[in-house]
Structures are given as structure tokens and as C-alpha cells.
Image (cartoon, rainbow, N blue to C red; front, side, top):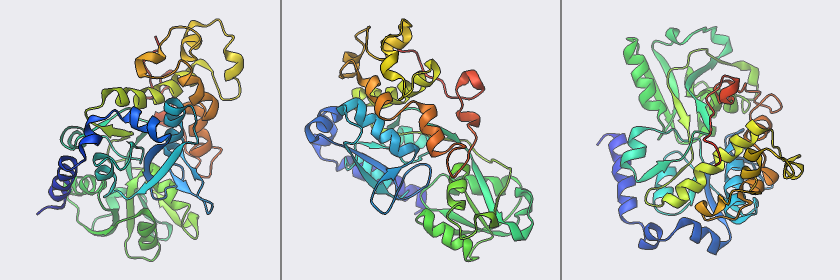
Length: 340
């Protein structure tokens, strides 16, 4: 049976066998009763979700988990991070093992329609690329005919890779691994000529090399990879809360509200800021939250720009440009509906 079909059937079976309480009970009620958000994240991807030796998690996805906890519980520290491989992630969400999946996962038609999950909002616009050893002197992807390629199992990269090579009449030999660390070791040991993944992951994986300068990321981007947190289908209230967590962070950046100035911004006469911070409007009740839900996100975690900069931006080890992830007014794709 093809691997993709097997994963699909496994995911559907997990959904069918999920406890009735998981499918019927409000996720927000369950989170409040536990006093904790259980968030599925990557097993270790710098810039998105990775833990240090003390178990402290950092990254864009990790901070998104904290933002959801700040909105739902008023406390960004009330998160239990559950590291998941690419093959485990969707099943863990469907079965109720995690409340939300924030694990650099691409939003696709199949995942959004046939697996019992819904993607909430794109927190990072990405695209698949290639990293090669500098010593090979390769300048572009069209030079990769006949190459052996390190791939992470259970990801959209497998189909994208096959499509790209087929379109250009090229051949390749796949070398498949279960974790990002394994792909790095395979690449570094020479088991493959090239490593393919989302470009953001290539930057993150490159810093794990013994000599990061030995890896070159090629200029080609061969796919669209909108990375988005996901929730289970059938709980619209939780879907709205998770989606508007991201929108609140975007609106805060657009309005100039930061973790440092959010308290003084409470005195603003700008009606958009006042509605965002819950000073007026009474909009929290529509999400089943207190009026200060967005204030808690911004105060405890920050706006989207702050989170991006410290985890992925020029102030981080990855040094990634905002690019498509800039606000719409700055030429990017990040755009949030208004809080009103």
C-alpha cells in the first residue's frame, strides 16, 4: 500500500477511535479544567520549537503555544509541550493527545478536508528548497540530476520533490529519515548529495552542522508551504480562539502595540487599540474569554513582529528576512481581519 494512503488510513482510524469526550466536549472547557494547554510541537527545530538542556522551549511555534495559553488561561506559562515527529503529529491531534498542533505543518487540501483537522491561520509562509555541500560547487537545482536526496518522512517534501524532478526530466535517489537531526547527520556523513526541506528548516538545520558554512542553500523555491497551527474539526469556538490569537498578534504589530508599551497603550484614544486591548467593545465574550485576552497575549508573549524577530529574524542565529511574512502594508502576506 502506498505510504501516503497508509498514513491517511491510520489518521482516519485514530479519529474514529478517539474517545467520545474528546469529540464532544469543548476544547476550551477541557483546557480550563486542566489549567494547562497541551501543545504539539517539533522534536527540535531551531527558530520554531526546540528545547534547551533545561527543557525550556523557544521558537515561533513555541511562542504561539504560549500566546494561546495566555488567551485561554491568562497565563502564557501554562503550556505542556509535546514533541512530535512529522509522522506522529496529525494522529496526536486527532486522538486528543494535544489540544492544538503548532508544529511547522503545511496547510494542504487533503489535510484540511480528509483528516478531521482544520488549519487556523498561516503563521509562516514558506517554500521548499535545497541545501548542498559547498565543496560540490552546485549553483542551482537543475544541476541535481541523479543526486541522492535526504528527505524527512511524513512531510509534503516527498511529493514536491517527486513533482519537481519529474517535471524537469531528472532522476534522484531518496534517502528517508524520521527526524530533522537524522537528516542532518545523513547529509553531513555523505549519505546524500542534497538535503531538501522548507527553506526555513534548511536555515535551522544548517546551524546544526559542525561547520554551518559548509552547507549552501540554493536559490530555487519549488513549492508553496503555508505553515499553520491546526485544531480538530467540530469545535468552532476553539478554532476561532486559536485563529484570533494569531490575528491579535498581527493587529498589535500593525497598531504599534508591543509587550513593552501595552500598558500605556490602554490610555490610547485610538478605537482600534481600545477594542484590541478590551477597553471597549465587549468582544471577548464572543470567544468565550475575558475582555483582556489580547492584552494578555501581547503583554506576556509580544506582537507577531517581536516573536518573529527574536526567533527567526536578524536578531536570531537564523537571520531570516521577513520577506513574505512581513505585514501586508510592508509588502508581505501577513494580513489580519480587524478587531471590531
